[in-house]
Image 1 (cartoon, rainbow, N blue to C red):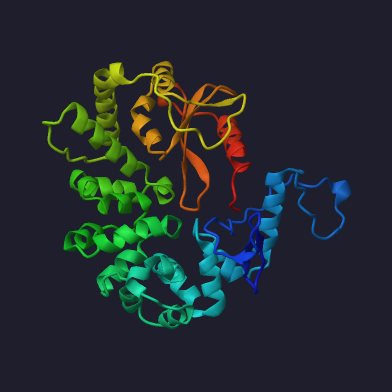
Image 2: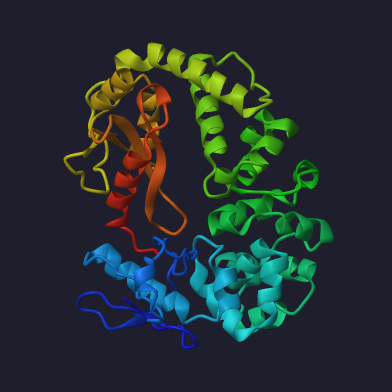
Length: 385
């Protein structure tokens, strides 16, 4: 793959036996820039030597990081500052910013709406055979008109809801179901009182079952959680809890969850009941092949029996994830060093594998050293900046 920097912004890809073709990368190409901390210089070395180049280790991951850093520095600062907040599909955003200066203002006022406009082809059931020129023309209109062109309700209320969504949470996979949910008056009402939205809140309100089990207090708490901007952990836990509840207590009604503490307590209780009832039926059936090769420290779990044993050994409910692994939604690994831990990985909207959960025995937090070890392992397989 070759990515041509600003202002050309052309992405080319070649596979064996095929010619070079243009494509739109879904992976992240602009990451938030963090200058590397350096120790204060010694008084004897206070020389004006100009900019000191950053030293990168000679590894594939480091070479990729250097290339993405150079790409970022080719961008105008206002463009990079807007694009870096989106975790996926930044390429269409960059092309939109280059062609339509007003799109930068839209990205500041309503990031999610700007994201949907940049990725208008993913909303083709509403835009029809729209061209890039059509999208650029729409970019200069009122927010409610842009929303209507993309298939959202063409109302100020819908535009205000979209403006609350954090740019880090924006993805086609989340915005398409949100578009459908916003046609329901109840969704507008449920979201109107929240000062901000993230992936966690949105994933709940677009799912009728999860929305029925949630309360205004729970949604408010999730909306204030920084981690929920990047991944809908609360929605996944709530969905898993309700699925286990239907299995072990089919006669019990849907609970109304008032807080994250209550959700975690219900999840732990139902997980134990689920394992007691289903444990004898969880045998040595093989799980789908893990997507990433393990190491001496990070070992993939390949059978249901190993999954059950991991749960017993680590005092956690990882065995209840067997169905998720069978669906290839996530994969489980046992971490042996620098400390014993259980790891689950999943794909993010950019297409890269990332940490879903990384916990020690009894779901205790792991050390920073362990977290960094796993992140370095995952970085070897990443395409993103």
